[in-house]
Length: 165
Image (cartoon, rainbow, N blue to C red; front, side, top):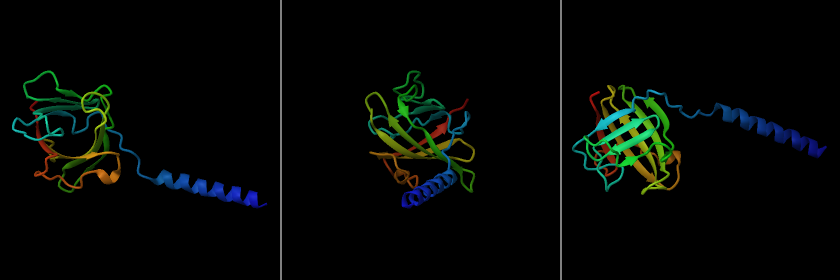
């Protein structure tokens, strides 16, 4: 009898966990035309996601990103497409001013920076023409590891402008 009661209680507890888990926030599924996708440039940038490299052009697509040292370059220095990076958009929202915010996470899966993990907070101006980002380098992904604000004085701050199409 005790075993039967324990089985029923365990089943009910498991059922409650499943129901509560179903109420949890679903993962964000990126659209094929996310506002952050496109070509971004800043010819005067002196800091970027990798301190040793100063990218002046970044092309972001649903498949990843390609980073270029110069705006006129046609061959990327870093190519985070085709399995070179794991992860992407974690969440997205719009603030009261109309700015679009993203939280993204990345793990580089090959090349010189293989194994590096980053969590990034991005802000796109309400017209989608200015992209500011703040990066946290992490050892493990965790919702608490995202930057809490964008700080233009930080060495992991970047600003880019949407390129004319």
